[in-house]
Length: 294
Ligand SMILES: NC(=O)c1ccc[n+]([C@@H]2O[C@H](COP(=O)([O-])OP(=O)(O)OC[C@H]3O[C@@H](n4cnc5c(N)ncnc54)[C@H](OP(=O)(O)O)[C@@H]3O)[C@@H](O)[C@H]2O)c1
Image (cartoon, rainbow, N blue to C red; front, side):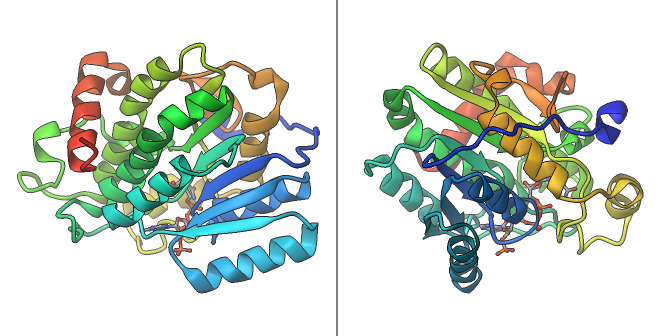
């Protein structure tokens, strides 16, 4: 992990003219530079964001700078109904999505409960991508091609003992920003196992990646341990995240590779708790229930 954190990502120089790339959370940080990276290679974009004004500015900028299409959908991931609406609209559309990058995420230092009665980091960092993938899974399979990329984190290792499935809302334990972030990223990696099973031999792949420790607005609300220990000492440019996400989405080297965790562009063994198939099944069932998908 440490060696890969310092490595230069592998790069892909191929163009991606006319392909469609969906990105969540493209209004700042990693999502923003990644949107520009794909557009600079000729890809059309579908960005899924919560802020309308920032989104309109982004699409105008992308269109002006690169001459590609930039469509958008709006959803605040702290509202399940909005995320489901995006999933359903996409599932009913005739869009062929070539790459789907689930990037939207938050890091919070205080326990915050959403209007859906869920802990916010779990809802935004895990449940949002789960709901969209779950609703879209049959359509993507029918397309017979798509690379789904989950922007996850080495921070999944903060959930050292894995998930507390009976306390996802942190009612029985003292809340910790590090642990709740690690838990949400762990939940996402666990359910990736089940999505990967579903997509076997379909032409659709799903992988997760750590985008580097990069300077963005993430963690700005933290002056504590997260900032000092995990982020600040090793800040790099979000360009390494964008280049890595481009490589993972486009490079022929990654053709057919699925169910893996990458640190930037390097495959890595994730923490043992995210490989537990029994817990993965429980997390899958819980995510369906909490996402009101059954
Ligand atoms: N930065 C790092 O070092 C690092 C390390 C490991 C993993 N990551 C992961 O990388 C991803 C992107 O993070 P970042 O560093 O680029 O952070 P960022 O600059 O804060 O960007 C986060 C993006 O997610 C969006 N977002 C946040 N809450 C949302 C909500 N409730 N509904 C919809 N969209 C929401 C933000 O929208 P607004 O513009 O409206 O706020 C923004 O577009 C996250 O999944 C994060 O966990 C980052």
